[in-house]
Length: 132
Image (cartoon, rainbow, N blue to C red; front, side):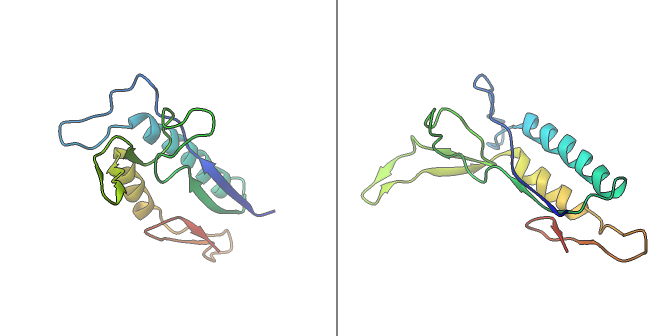
């Protein structure tokens, strides 16, 4: 049975000070979360033969959560809902968090998976890990 893992992510801790000296938001807890999950996923693929077809990170950008508004953050990019407003509306400035660079590096290093019969079951992509 093919598996597609959707909406994998974790919330920014409310108490986390995420600003770094160079302006990139430090979300090392998110890196640790995805690193551990992807290691287990890779093991499931290679050792257990699980047919994984996709892995989708939740979410690209911080968004409005139904129960908590902008107080809960899940995004790889921080959205500044307090950024200056122009005549065209709020700018909602977006800033990359450290997990963006980590995910890009991880994806680039993901070697194609090889089936036991020698056939390729996966391929690399800059945007996402794609399984055929």
